Image (tube, rainbow, N blue to C red; front, side, top):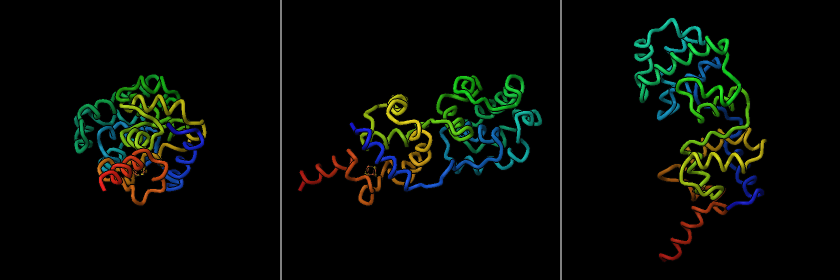
Length: 218
Ligand code: SF4
């Protein structure tokens, strides 16, 4: 397991590879961002961005959702996975925000999770992006990267989430999320991680293990 100093070094390298980055989801208003995150479950950000322009031209704030029927929302988001469920979540979330939160996106983890379609991961990414809250949203990329390097030893993203919550400092949680996701999405990829050009090769448990296996096989 890595020391605090090593974790700090690892995160600084990953952050340095993706400076000044933010979410890859397109949006203009907070409600549009929440919609985009709901749509992004089991769907790539690129696909969400291809899907949202028509919907976002009509819906900027929660109250706008009443302009559309469920079947109209379904049609507009039909290119993403589970679009029927997501269309209903979007509609119900808009209504709930109007009725119970004065059309504002709540700045609170528990309150956010009372919205339809908003689980812990969605709530954390919304708080992190909209309110600069110190949360790392552990998706499959972050889970894989953290385990390969050896920052955590966990089987499921939920366990990684709990470990990271304890291991990372407040400042690290504020800045680590997007670099970690992009590092997993484009560099430490699931099938072909770019170990040979990786600046973390010497610190990475996975790469060191691979090296040992290669040496043994020679
Ligand atoms: S050395 Fe390979 S496995 Fe380790 S972090 Fe880099 S790309 Fe990922």
